[in-house]
Amino acid sequence: MTMTRFDPARLFGLPMPIVQAPMAGVSTPALAAAMSNAGGLGSLGIGASTADQARAMIQETRALTDRPFNVNVFCHASAPRDVAREAAWLAHFAPLFAEFGAEAPTTLQEIYKSFLHDEEAHQVLLEECPAIVSFHFGLPTPAHLDAFRQAGMTTMATATNLAEAAAIEAAEIDVVVAQCPSDKGTRG
Ligand SMILES: Cc1cc2nc3c(=O)[nH]c(=O)nc-3n(C[C@H](O)[C@H](O)[C@H](O)COP(=O)(O)O)c2cc1C
Image (cartoon, rainbow, N blue to C red):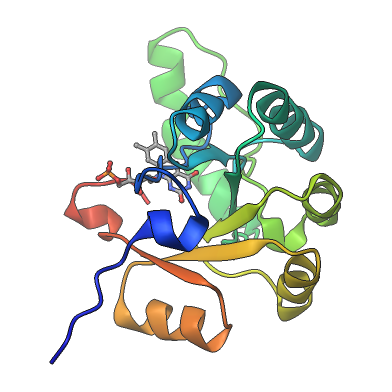
């Protein structure tokens, strides 16, 4: 049996076969641009950013490099709200906040808005059109995927198990990023 060795340099036309991991809240335009300028593939993680922040990050990266880079979004299922359950958690933690003299929150907020429900972020990606767009914690809708393809973007998605890899293949996404599940010691 012949094994084909995956070569991201060949796939993306890069001088160097290195992809910098997207890290929401951590990977900066300067880091992504430095990576792409060095011949690898720089990545921005916009999973923790608003649409406006994402646009600014993409434009800042583009000002620092004319090489391709990757923009990564979170496609998780949003948490269903359960007011009674949230109130119970808030009551549970109230004494701990009090112990440290801190003001306890009165409501719980979802910190990361899913790309699945973020039409503004979708528009930003279509308008800014990075060479590569990648998906984490799930897949975008088929309509979003079609729009990215038609705009000429290469697509990548993270799989943490065989079922996710099969779903990525079925969605005809260009690249599968095989990654350890979070309980194996890496985030994501
Ligand atoms: C602080 C931090 C933030 C991360 N954020 C993202 C993210 O936004 N999107 C993503 O696909 N992966 C994210 N990851 C996972 C990384 O992209 C990478 O796949 C993971 O760290 C495993 O690679 P490593 O073994 O080289 O660390 C994050 C990892 C870290 C440590």
